[in-house]
Image 1 (tube, rainbow, N blue to C red):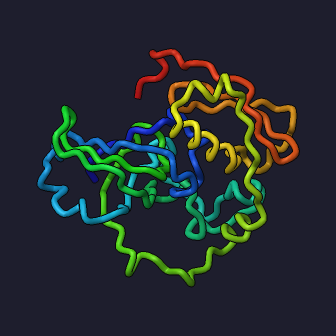
Image 2 (tube, rainbow, N blue to C red):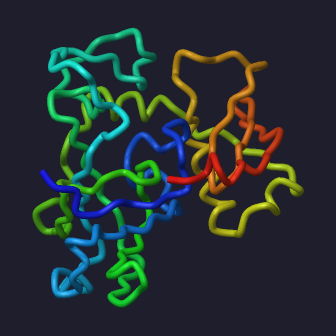
Length: 234
């Protein structure tokens, strides 16, 4: 398969990336096509759709060997219970392909980078290779009566965290990124088996290393430091 584009987001590392697309609607992404595919004609008609499907490569989860496991440990189950790989969206699968539904916010056909699609609700790291883009069709892709299995059951048990960001840290981000950061923290990016209220976690977001702790259902941001430019390159 060929990489047709790469998405650019505020996440340079995996920690903090939402577990599913659409969970944090304010997260922005820019889809920039590879030189071979920078043809505005390929986007003709896309302006009529509100959402698209992204098929992408779990590029950070490639295994050196060809082995695979029929079961995985979903983080939503605390990492200590196994489920069949086909019943999960784990990146550790025979073919490392991801699937995300995102909302189109803008399409620019003429930029120095060629055609660019701006989206929101993405759950991808910066620089993730995009293998294909398809329009989302609400009359066939939406199933209101669908069941969500153990993932839905766990989601119903989980309350969003209250989020506290001191004003001096909040002011480091523009309004959109500030709300997106709140959404990321409210969704509790920690592994479910880590519940130490004294532990300090750190995620890289929008050029900053953001540190926080979680106690009594509340995520409190304690620090945010700029990431060195050399370490912040895709």
